[in-house]
Length: 428
Image 1 (tube, rainbow, N blue to C red):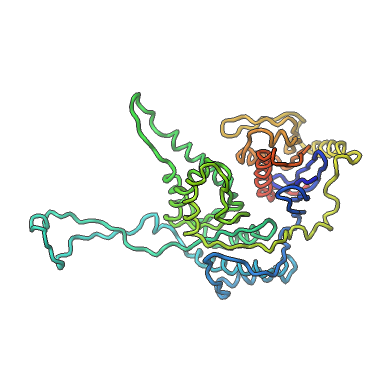
Image 2 (image 1 turned 30 degrees about the vertical axis):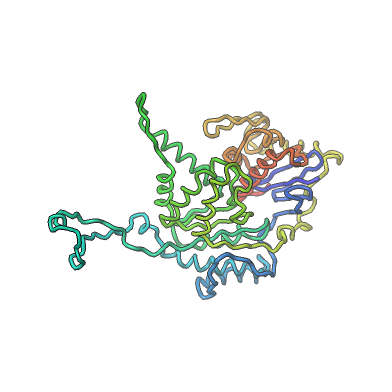
C-alpha cells in the first residue's frame, strides 16, 4: 500500500493510512501510487546526481563566462558535498546564469510605456491622389518606436526529484533585481482571482436595463507587470478550468509588457491541462508559452530524493502493526502540550467560505484524509491551512485508485502547497 508524507509550511505531517502511516517532516512516497512510481524521502533534496545531458527546446548555448559567480557557486556546492556532480543540472544553471546576468540591469518599463514617434506624410514622397487641401488637413500620427524584444524565460520540466526547484531557487537568490517575485503557481493564480474579484467589486452598480461588459484580466496583468519584471513559478500546472480559461490572455499581456518567466513543472508544455475540460480553448496558451520561454527537460529518470533514505530511519508503519493509532494519538498529545491553546474544532475563513477542521490545537491539526480530500476543497484552502498550522496529521489515507481520482487530485494539490511552504517553520 502506498502513501505520501510531506514536510510543508506544515513543518511536519503525520499520515495514518488504512494500511500505512508515516511520521516525517519529509516527503515520502511508496510504490503503488502516483502512477506506480517509487518516490522516497526528500530530507536532503539538494543532493542530486546524474550524468546524462539535458534536452532543451531552442535553448541558447550556455556561455560559462557569463555570470561565472553563479556557476562557481554551484561548483562550490558540488565540491563541498552539498550537491553531487550532475551534468544536466550544470547545463541548466549555465543557461540560467546568462539570464541572471541580463536581469541585473533589466527593466520592463520600456514595454509598459513604449516610446512613440510622431510622423506626418513625407513631403518628399509623391502625393498621387491627394490634393493640397487634404495634405494640409492631415493630422500627425503617432506610432510606437521599435524596441528590442524582452529576454526569453525558461520552462524547466522533468520528473520529481531531479533538482528543478533547487536550480530555480539558486538562480532567483542571485538575481540582483529588486523587481522579482518567486511564488508557487497555485498561490499566484489565487492572487490573480482575488485581484479580478476586487476589480469587479469596484465597478459602479448597473442601472436597471443597462448592460455593459468589463474584462478585468488584462488590467490585472498590467498590475503585475508594474510590480515585477521577473516571475519565478514553482510547480507550474493547470488543473482548474477557471485558471485554464484565462491563462492565454493573462500571460500574453505579461509577456508583451516585458515580464520574464522562469517556471518548473513535472509536465512538458504540450501536456499542460491534458484531458481537461474545453482544452481546445487552452491550447493557444501553450503556443504563447513556447514563444516567450525556452523549454528545458531536466530528467535523468531517477528521484534523487531517495539518496538519504537509509539515514532517515523508519518513516512509516502499517496500520495493522500494533499500536499504530495509539502512536499518533500520543504524538498529537505531546505536541498539543506545547501549544497555548485547547484541543477542539477550528473554523477557517477562506474567500468568504467557512472550512471546519474537527480537531486542532494551536498550530497542530489532526485530520482524516476524508476531511481534507473528500470535500470540495482546493489550493486556496490548503494554502490557508499551511499558513495556520506547522504540523498536520492525516489519517486513513486510502489506496488511490481511479475511483478516487478527484480525491487523489486534491491530495496532490495539498502536498504541493504544504511542501512549497516547508521552509516557514522548523521541523518537528
